[in-house]
Figure 1 (spheres, rainbow, N blue to C red):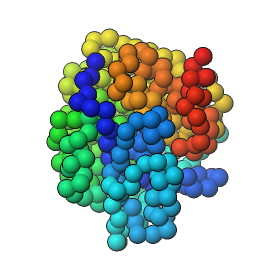
Figure 2 (cartoon, rainbow, N blue to C red):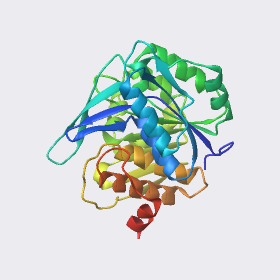
Figure 3 (tube, rainbow, N blue to C red):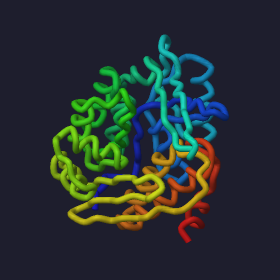
Length: 296
């Protein structure tokens, strides 16, 4: 298993408003993951950037209501707080239209950020926030530490250049992505193969300890130290899929950082993701006991 120096978790990247057909909801993968980790009782912080506007103020209030610290959230005088247009199909699956430039495109490195990274046992980051050079350079400085590094691959067209994603994957100890993203990364490297073969190749090629691939409603699969672990997922009535993958990741992290076995961690992750998919928005109200009930 992956060995963590400590259980302190740092999330880095975008915070924003998901503009859903039913109205705006707080979102952004790193913020969603941090929020769900907080619900799971984990020690978690988040580094991001907002605009000096009403939307930014409301995000700060939301984070405070969740019990998340906001001292590492930077404020930008020129760029606005991020908004993402969310489109739902007839099965309530989400696609995203991400505006730019926004405040999280200019996350800077500060002494407090560096101290937080150095004190963390796990740093979680995505690929989307690195679409711009400023935030990407800041991230690379912050992850130059002894912490375990987890990459959450988010290939949101037109963002996700191969050279940027590759650079971040080579830094990672753990990777989480969906099956479409797995196929795309294999395609970049002319590796066309079945899912399990691609996962094993990815672990070898990038030197990654754990590769976790989500399959939507069909569950997920994990590759670790030459072994595969699969879970078929949990059946729920889907409200929308916004943030379900982020909830899955938070459930997985909350399990592995506490030393649970790979298969057990995967099951808990699937249950967390399914529960959130059954509710509207990326960070809906729920009690952790609801996850346990779903697993029974």
